[in-house]
Image (cartoon, rainbow, N blue to C red; front, side, top):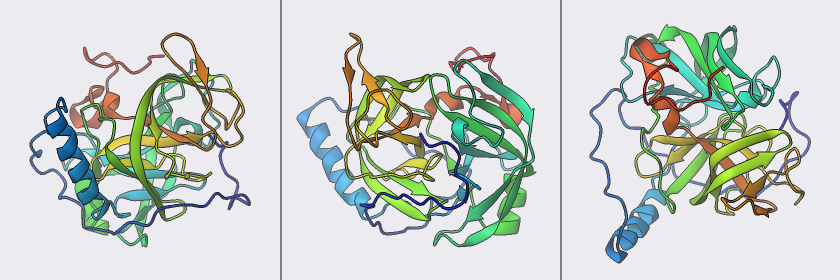
Length: 300
């Protein structure tokens, strides 16, 4: 993970894969049927074919946001309503007041922060303003969820932009995905390579992290970008870090720890944090409720 940026970065990595833009699915529509879990050669072949098709219809920039130091997205949960206050999703380490310490959980922190909302082509669609960080932490994950001063309906009327939906289910290995950076107005396409039991970086530990295949050469400023399933158009993660120098478990050099405690380093490989865990912690009115029975997010 990068510490928050101060202006444009001087150092950049290259290798982003170009994608073709398509219009996003309508917001607040009925859910599409869920795909069955892979369990046979036929399932694997079908998913491979679906991924190939998805690469030709990867996400555009509509609904993503640019922060002063990171990327993010305007998001809705599966049960969100048009009359609910909007939410912006990014990384906890993108917090302007500083990165949360290990073990620190932020709830309802009053914060007025501006975000630039983008249209499909990456143009400026309007400005969003937060009232608070509804939830933020860098423990087990790396997330900040900002509550806005406008509803989805008001945002749609003002900008014509719909939110991106956060998927409620755990994603699958092999899924074609795109990291969409509002800060850089760039996209990075690859696939989910694996899920990492523990990802350690400096003093922070993240769990069940998404490891990308090598094609996603992310860079500073892409932190907080939505990780989008190319087939469904839903968010399955948030981009947050990359092993830049091959070091072990240092800042900007995360290491993987398996269930047996073995440490592995993959130089140049990037990672994201899963977002399905958020959906079980959101109550009516888009309010974070950590007391919900299925909520597994870290608590203060």
